[in-house]
Amino acid sequence: MPDFQFASLGDFFAMGGYAFYVWAAYLFFFAVMIWNLLQPRLERRKVLKLLQARQARESNAAARAGE
Amino acid sequence: MWQWLYKLGSPRHFYEMTSTFLPWLTFVTYFLLIVGLVWGLGFAPRDYQMGDNYRIIYIHVPLALGALWVYVMMAVMAAMHMIWNIKVADMVAKSCAVVGVSYCAVALFTGAMWGKRIWGVYWIWDAKLTSFLILFFIYIGVMALRSAFDSETSASKAASVLTLVGIVNLPIVYYASVWWNTLHQPPSRLSLSAEGANPPEIWIPVFFTGFGLIGLVFLLVILRTRNEILWRERRAQWVQDLVKQELSRA
Amino acid sequence: MNSARKQKLGIVLSIVLGAAIAVSLILVAFDQGLNVFFTPTEIADGKVNAHQNIRIGGMVKVGSLVKEGLAGTRIEFVATDTNIDIPVVYEGVLPDIFREGQGVVAEGYVDEHGVFQARQIMAKHDENYMSPEVQAAMEAGRHKQAQGSLTP
Image (cartoon, rainbow over all chains, first blue to last red; front, side, top):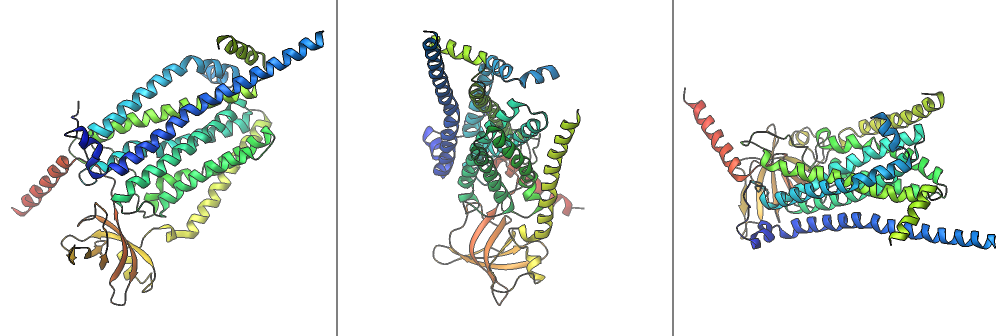
């Protein structure tokens, strides 16, 4: 197992003076990937709701036609 | 094997098969990504001249290669859709574009963050960077073209043709720093020896994040394709049943 | 494969092939225009005019770097491609990995004395990554080799 390369957690966040660039890169990466993972799940919920509404409408129409 | 592939071509089978292995894929992807990111950020040795700034490599390189890989996938799917008229192939191609464009965007941004202090500039119009920017625009073009049509058939045909044309750009992106002189460095040659350039202690974490991000490509493409299947197959009985099932569960 | 499929396959292949040929022709027409910098040899061959805005690329010649001024912000060095040397002067901020023996790309123009007046200096990084320990060991190994070759 390789060693932790930083003397302290503070050193880790400082990234040898490159904190802004390294953390900006990783932050943007996480933001985009989290959106990537959330968006299809929200989309799925939306599609299912739409299809449910459609089904309800159709069964209502069928019931009315049957009366 | 062929039968299995053939089955994946049916929207229903694609949906059902992916239902069973999505949890596994999710688990493996998260595992690879977490190991690779923690290792790369905290445990890989710093570079002798770029210090900790080079730790961006652990996302930058896999994302850029991933963006090329997604394009290959998208192009194969576009060809399959055009030749054999496989509906699922078109849905996968549509999903690929969104994932590819996001990988491109992050690769461009992380590259700028890496370049500023090491090169001295965020951006330069050299062959490598410019051809990669063109890849980004081709992805956007494919998405825009698809949304410009009302008819799904015309949309997928137009998007497929542009996708196939765009293949030409892939070798240019990959070999740009070999064919022309650029500020961007050429691809690295990995070494198995610990005493030399590019030793395993530096590139092993790249493999973790690399396979993790390829896993993520599959995961994201599958999630998007499943939504597309539900919508396009909304009149099929099995989707109607599935919707009822989801309704009773909620 | 039936004939309709074959025809479609033909269309797909001709799209890819057609695009490939078109783009290759464009790239050949551009020839070296896609290079981001000129080498010192190309400048010596008269490929650029004096005062033309260009980039040059080469190696910072070992032993050539001179820092002047109070903060050492004015620098002079020699850019080389091992064949031709070009003196470069520059005043301003330097990238972190700029140093002797390192690849460099400079933006500016060649003045009437053949000196490159740089407006911006960029460092070119190679494709080799390693830890400081490994680098030091390699450096030591190289010195040993050099000494060994001197003794008969």
